[in-house]
Image (cartoon, rainbow, N blue to C red; front, side, top):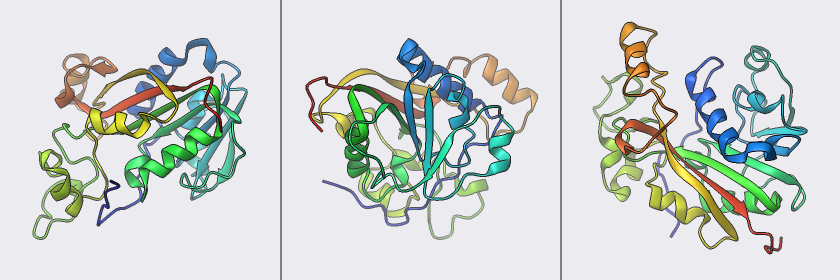
Length: 249
């Protein structure tokens, strides 16, 4: 059953130079391999474009889609270009089966219906194409998108520790976005004509910390790798799936 988040809000995209952008790109590249080269690619919810441009040097035709135009300054900070299309992830303005790779980085948790958004991604993906999504990890220590809790206004960004660990019905009563267990994320793509090719946890990049000795030390030790097997060290989780060759659109 589709859950409703009472205080659902749009997300804030990562900024140029943040480690999260590099980690996402490296994971996508490691999974797609040579298929990324010359691919026709769609990035749903591209935001300011800071993530999308990472793929511009290898993708044959790269399109970023968002409900608002990208921040041109952010795009220019990183070399590369892509075509921007204004639209919603809930109703993609493209024909069936036109993209080799579709990505969605931290988008589904902000949409009214994440299941419908996944169905749309399936529709525009070619047979044999790859869908890569990331969503917030429920077991990360901090509430990554904040919550509307009466009387709790003292924590910066309102990132309440351990709030995401509450049962879903309680969390989504106050949270500004969904969080996902791996089981919940996999349920979005299961029985939809996909073969799961990889899934895992994306190690927290600690971009919210100031550039201090502490952050550098943590990145060289506990939070060093792009992927982790320990859910408590992951701010996001990812799922990569291939559209079955026999799937009809």
